[in-house]
Image 1: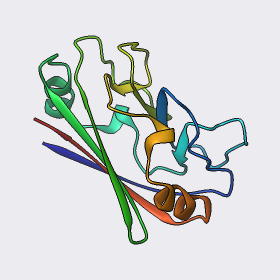
Image 2: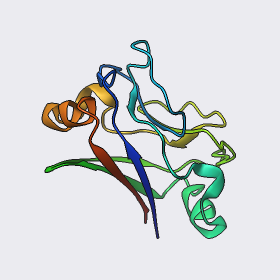
Image 3: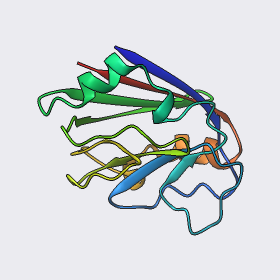
Image 4: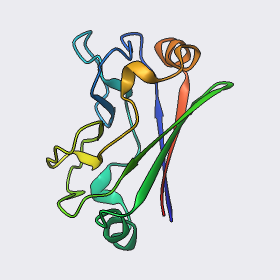
Length: 137
């Protein structure tokens, strides 16, 4: 199963956070948002298909997130968790830890914002359009 989100980068995208990455529906980004990779997302976790959400709540589920911008792409893999809510209508956060709140959509990720390809991050910082694909198996 797959969900696709369209968003865009912003001049303040830095991709420096060590434990999270985020995609938000917000239309702004301050320099403090060093986990945010893209803004103005056309969808948030609250919009995801209920069957997709149920699949992500399986702790044995593998969740793969691919962020594409320009000619660049990066894929990060994490896992599901029974406590994932998918209620946020504002943002989706991937975490390297097992921490879950209303914005978390994947835990146990192999890396966070700082691990994303620097060419991809630079394209996002230049305002490139982004496509975020979330797949669950």
